[in-house]
Image 1 (cartoon, protein in one colour):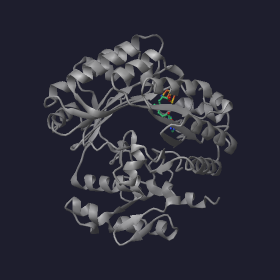
Image 2: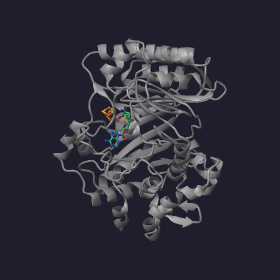
Image 3: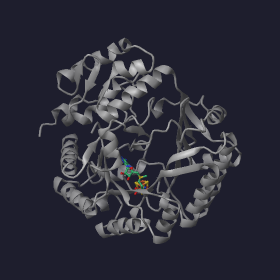
Image 4: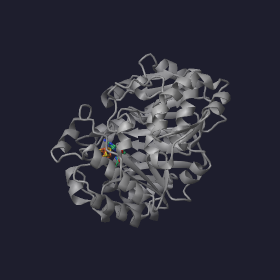
Length: 448
Ligand SMILES: C[S@@+](CC[C@H](N)C(=O)[O-])C[C@H]1O[C@@H](n2cnc3c(N)ncnc32)[C@H](O)[C@@H]1O
Ligand code: SF4
């Protein structure tokens, strides 16, 4: 297949899990400002919560997440004590007991916590917030470390979705990435979850890893389909060894070239599309899954966890590095575990950076969200919804002219749409509406 159009995409465009994106947050947003944002929460509207658990049992060489491998249990116990305190600190500023429609535990590996530790967090969250009937409670899970005591605790607290880090089933690829998890182990974890009644299952798969071939990707997807997850996230491995030093280890095995990476990506996508509906740039969902239903109704959203049906305007994050989002702006927690512990112990909310949103940010954010979710947008309609006019975006359309000439985007008046077979251009098309993006910035890795 001819992938030459990919060379037109700027490898450094963001993934737009927020707009403005995190590199544009600044330290002038601190805990005092965030306290006011919390006070302004509308108690009538359901909000979302995110808890970042920054621990794993073993480091995967490819990992780009904020996590720690610790000796002994004391650092985990200290985290637990402080996350409970952090929830209590946030409670001081909340108007009453807000309703919650989505709760997501990410990491790291939330199942690095014992059932008892998980119970303590859930108890405190229930005392502080009202989890509404039918709320989605989701957990990211490392399938190598899941036991029945944990799944029973999850079920007791109403967890109803689990995202398993699978990445690749090939034994040689697994050795190269320092993550051995045979098919039977992953199948066992899925079985435990389903037996506990947690039936909504997501898998994360990665392409662009060392030793991956079309055959190995074929086998991985065949094995994935056997376990029948409802959703699959297919991420391109982001190689940023200047930030994540252990990723250098993967270079020993040789990373796929840009061309090989594109072939792996398109092959994986075409195999997944035999069983799932493609969603946005990197998700796949069964036709009856809520994500696929929302995509068809154009009700999909994008947040820090990726694609979601969550419509909440406010997300409160707990734990180091977590990013909260409110109608006024974004606020990110201190990312370093030790510094986060210190802040919380000192009774501070540990906000390190953020950004207050201007009306123009909100408008551009809405345009970019539609492009990322629905591969198209009517710029005039969105501008009018924000009581603005579309003419200010003429330079953005000019920037898209070369993409339009190459068939990466169709432009009709103020409407633009990305053809189905060019969905991976969505990030680059979005970047045309990003007032902060400087093409020479080096925050990102490969375009596909
Ligand atoms: C927090 S982990 C998922 C839960 C658990 N820690 C696990 O790995 O099983 C989130 C996901 O991010 C993805 N990921 C991690 N490092 C990445 C990287 N460098 N590039 C792209 N995706 C990455 C992986 O697919 C991983 O499953
Ligand atoms: S288990 Fe997940 S978070 Fe932990 S090191 Fe591996 S990919 Fe990263």
